[in-house]
Length: 103
Image 1 (cartoon, one colour):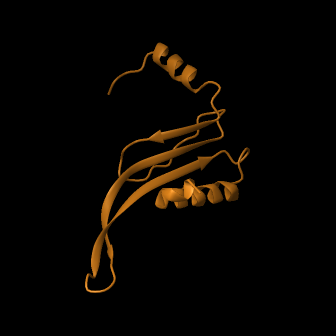
Image 2 (cartoon, rainbow, N blue to C red):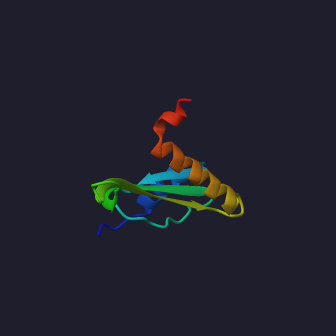
């Protein structure tokens, strides 16, 4: 594991300074619960897509479908959890049906 120097921590702080929100793509096929970087209001972590077997209809009882994990962490002093859940639901709709963003 690489050691961080005080200079690299200072650089990390400078990168986060003034930000209100973080979007991170770890590329991992599993979910993660991210920690919010103060004073930011939230962080969205997007995992990689992976194929899973799902129940099909008709003669094909099983088929493959792509799944992607997305985790939203919010500072509840800034963003109400219900509003965050509504936003995540809308995000899911746009990801599952990208054409809807054009209408």
